[in-house]
Length: 566
Image 1: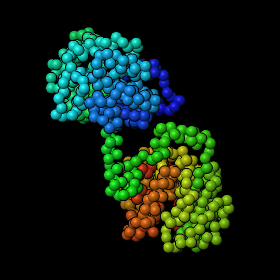
Image 2 (image 1 turned 45 degrees about the horizontal axis):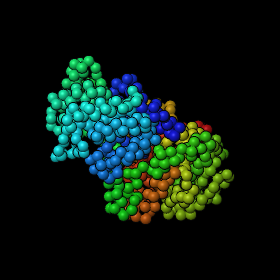
Image 3 (image 1 turned 180 degrees about the vertical axis):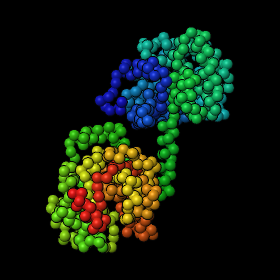
């Protein structure tokens, strides 16, 4: 369940969740979180694969990532109160169970108080490692890894179990024998001693890239459980031996897999690369594609929750911008004012938009601007239409783009459902792409704006819906036999999408020289040239896939066809 303020849970309910999951699923996946934001991301992320929805079952509060996030080495330097604060951030930003990396647990008396504090907060499990205090990180090569006396460590586990007051709380013994070079036999010996002392499970650790020694331990662990007459969960952390699959772990009897530091490491890499890009370019623009939009961060942390509800339940006005300044040698009036059964194309567009609840419509006119006689819209004049092309026209309306807008070519007709589906789609830049192109491309005798994508068009040709796909190229020079879609001349830009194209347009206007994608110059660039630049700079462009439902007026033959359809 996605975390929101209203989905918070009580500590005693959360504490029980991990045991319930183990009883229900037998294998669970856990991922590291080191603050509230990483917990929100890990809590809400889902992947749909065939008929399966994959997600993380809970969190690992790693001492390594907590220390690193605070700028300290992983040597048990961060105090208990600081650890508690990080744990509270994770708990307050999620509704899934949490496992705490307890390092060595400290002195036995300190460990008892640690257990009480964790239980009170709603923590489900703590894992402590059998090394001497202060420990050194297990993955750092060349460091001395001193293991604790197994009897002393077993006593610490026993004392921890004696002070806990809830049957839901679990203490797991982490065995470092393979890290310290003590070998498999020592690891099994310690596992037996810790289980008999009351440990609720065993975590076996390794820094080898080959999972062989981990799997060998798992085999011996199964033998040990038969000898003891009971079995408790087996935990692993495949940081170094990361080629092993969850299926292989399940096959060898593992019950919990912990992805122990990946969110912190990913953030570390991204921060360094972003900072370097800013230094190299002496500005932040080139780094923008590596960053989440501010709006997305606002949404994840709940800042936009009220606004999102308002937008959902209260129809917020959205603008439509229609560039219509250019001329076409086949027509002696602007194409948008071409009559179809005594009614201009533009008038038909406006009627369709108003039927969808859109009344804020801006038209940029230029060629024979006196011909534009349609009422109820805002006109902006582009008297330089014969010198510059469509992008110049579009950005005549730059100050009307605020809050987001729908872009529409002036020479197309479209049905209401396309617009309604576009309004319900999610994304910052969305193109309406027609999948029927591949069925009628052999009949085409005109130049179209075509699209190449990672995946082929859907076979569900009667539906209009948003799909996840990646656009590689868009333009008029794409081989007709290779193209996957035709651009329908309709696009959506959110507030952040506007910021993207605004920055790119103004940057290219000031700095670009020579050819611009398929155009001889930036001044003569088409709308799809701008979209290709957006893609090339690494920004996400999403797709609303449609099957027909629109027509473009290329020539007078199209007028006859459109009138038959009307």
